[in-house]
Image (spheres, rainbow, N blue to C red):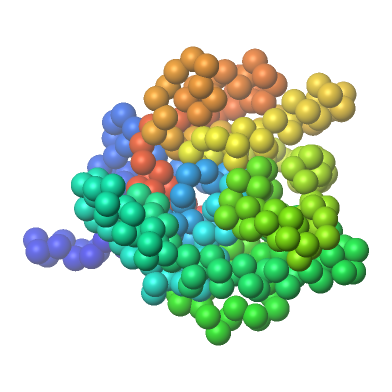
Amino acid sequence: MISQTAMGKKNILIKDFIKKNFRHFNAAVIVDAAEAYISHLKKGGKMFVTLGGAMSTAELGITLAEMIRQDKVHGICCTGANLEEDIFNLVAHDHYKRVPNYRNLTAEEELALREAGLNRVTDTCIPEEEAMRRIERKVLKLWRKADQTKQRFFPYEYMYQLIKSGEIKADYQIDPADSWLVAACEKNLPIFTPGWEDSTLGNIFVANVIRGEVSNYQVVKSGLEQMAALIDWYRANSIKETIGFFQIAGGISGDFPICVVPLIIQDLREECKLWGYFCQISDSTTSYGSYSGAVPNEKITWGKLDAKTPRFIIESDATIVAPLIFQYILESV
């Protein structure tokens, strides 16, 4: 809620502020996309959210967690970095360092950050020891246990085991209500992480297999198995109504899951509903030959969206736009 102004006007909801002020261009699309998201939910549809970029380090969980708790998100696909960086922030927030002048850093200043164990993501530095190594020590126990008992799990399932075990509860440095991963764990949402090896914990896992701490790579289920699991999830959740697709940023987190529909229809030769809503927030320049910059209409020819599917593209900074849309929705339904 927007606070009272010096002019003495009464408090207004974020939703009302947006509807009054966001009337044109990208701003107007924010309203259109939010209203269509709300309409999709009201019809009984479900929503699948994808997270690219560094949204967890940007603390998107402050609004996304509540969206999950209120059943406005039903499945997630994210990069391995977003999966781990939410939990890094959960246990090491007080040790993060913000660098507001990051655009002006010299190479020597960047080197000083590295030597201090600080890994920079735009204006925010993730502390190596307090975040990454702390979680490594905890999750390695889970990988070893699965190895010894001949069990296999998806990357997100290890994170859920870590949360549910209570092993890191004493280390929480933020309100867990602001962690989207904790909220997803409570709801037992499926989280698909294609290309998980392209992440800190993915790298750490490989290192532990090479060192012999874990006997084989099969302890973590593969991306191909994740696609098979996504097929099962899509089939089960699209029986009555369509599933919407809300994409934050581009890359593999968006490209991987949207393909499940043509896979089912064209490769498995089964009938299924197309995605029933599509919105992408991206600052990628619209262009031909760019997946991240491709306009939604292109997805019609690939059998992902229908001609009548509500579709939106918001060319803006997702760290600004996504929380506004989520809050708009939370204030509406």
